[in-house]
Image 1 (spheres, helix red, strand yellow):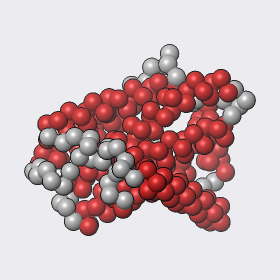
Image 2: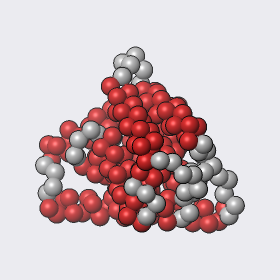
Image 3: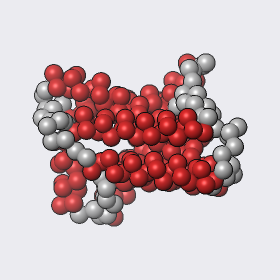
Length: 229
């Protein structure tokens, strides 16, 4: 990505198109389909837009870090490190939240109840679990491609290739990632934002490779879904 020179007006146009579509498409919801089907429809729409803008700039997914790992041991260690850092950040947030009573009990209930029901009644329903997990894993992969691969690199280009631009890019993508999952400033949005923050830092810190992030994200979401069964 750093080897491609793109003028800032072009980057700004790409971001305006992408972010507009990213939020606008979520207003389209087909009640006859499940939440995960609608979510995949949203993500694949964003993927099409991202690939369109990448094609126009001569950028490939390989340029953004979607390359076959050359060192599987290192990839596994980085993936494990991301998982540990994510769990630590979420646990730390929960400790602070509980000690300082940041979110009233009523608000927490209102924001967590829909999260359980949107996937259906998973309690004890392993058949449903295994039927939706492939879609969950695809969605996890798409989020890493789009949020860390595309969006963060485009933000970084917008603010020029400096350490400050990298910091801003990491923070912005994490904020959007968190907000997009609940459309408010809630416990869920902050928790999701923390996941995006850890993923963003890991992406920059470990050579801009997407596979460790994809693997970690898939494992995290699998753990989350298992807890619901």
